[in-house]
Image (tube, rainbow, N blue to C red; front, side, top):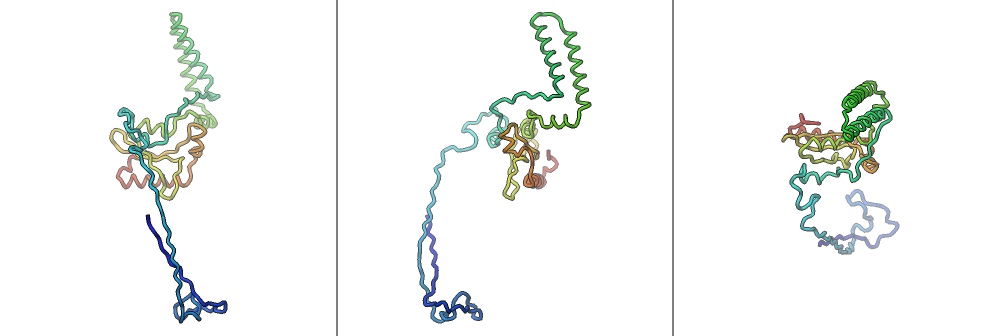
Amino acid sequence: MASISYSPAAFDETSASDLLRSSSSGVTGIPLKTLGKVRFVVKRRDVIVAAKMRKMKKHEYPWPADPHPNVKGGVLTHLSHFKPLKEKQKPVTLDFEKPLVDLEKKIVDVRKMANETGLDFSDQIISLENKYQQALKELYLHITPIQRVNIARHPNRPTFLDHVFNMTDKFVELHGDRAGYDDPAIVTGIGTIDGRRYMFIGQQKGRNTKENIQRNFGMPTPHGYRKALRMMYYADHHRFCNNLV
């Protein structure tokens, strides 16, 4: 508990005609008429400031009290907001990939028939697999620009953090551009691969509508580029600037 006291000063016997202020004597804001007979009236007022402490629990951390020892990354995984999705993503087939999907389905049906009947369909399976490989090669060798865009925008495409968590043994995300903002579309952090430290900087988009809104649909702002530059300087300062990913 603390008390703060302040004393405002007021002047008596001042009239509306005393508009002239003193500048030569170095005193400003006091009427000339009252310079010789000023009387201060002190009014004291006490202000009480009270603070209430929040009761803390015995164990209050982002990770559980007994984390599983076999979890990859240990307790650091509990510090990240990037969690596995509760609902599995539905498979999405692009229009130009439908011939490949039809061939895959035929191969699965022939193998299922061979297992059920016990007959030898190895020649048909080999022929269908060769057709599939040839169609796959022809499709992606002559892909159009709009088809490239559709592949890049695929809803089930792995994101930056998916790759990072699959590559690293431990990863901790670093936030902020030191100017009051943290761009969610740019993700930065330090991870270890085989005992070596790496600085990861990448563009992150959402895996569903809710995450896309949080990540601004993967569109960075100047704050994100400032954050990325700060992490580059950080890596240079700590002597692992050659390990930027």
